[in-house]
Length: 335
Ligand code: DGY
Image (cartoon, rainbow, N blue to C red; front, side):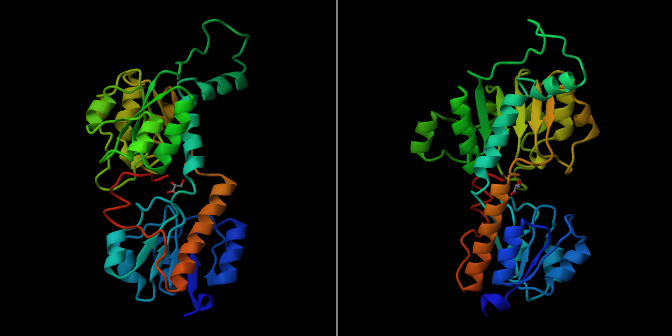
């Protein structure tokens, strides 16, 4: 099969240059609406193609793969996280799954760092107060936040994004602590002067800011459970740009409301959007899943996705295959 006869379907609108390149290379069915397809429409689309290029929000479970039919051979996900795809079910039916790792790590880390600064320094609250006409001149006691320099940052999942956050945090005078399944390369650990904690519980009890950067898998669902959140010190902050399901959001919102945690900076939510309780909680900065949202990152994600499809079309193994037990278990980044 030549690349041009390979049928590719995209499930969402993508950057124009990415769509143009896809259409040049393959027989491509683009998707101009920017809303997720209903499950039945997703199946109908997949039944007719060799490659499906889905993204976050497209739930590809075992039932999807049962219904998709034999033609489908590759799922070229536009995005790093693949928790919306049942990779085991895909592989069991001979379907390869690829993602777009690395290209969004630096942009995502910028946003995590922005949250690490914004919550303790009350950045959004200050902007809102000014806009509401509540600023009447500098005062020694108004809008006091907490100093960031000298604090301990605990990173859960020191993969690509976690490492990029750690580099930034070092420049802001934070010390780096991390919890992974196993320690990272000693040269990187040394360069970051990072402290490895085998026990997540012990790390949580000692850090001032927690940054969640592991993927969402069955093993990391509610990794920050109520019990673990209670291990944090009351002056601690939680930052999450990975996946909402990793934190017990209800417990987090309650603890912030009751002053048992200092605040949170979140880009992702357990049920897609923040709960009412979280929206009303004090000391929170809530973003609409935009950590990797730069023009550059989206184009590079598209290029990476195209490379995977092209390699597959040429009869090679696509470079970014999602390997169960490797990508999902070594606690890297979901972006
Ligand atoms: C991803 O690629 O999985 C990210 O969450 C997008 O920001």
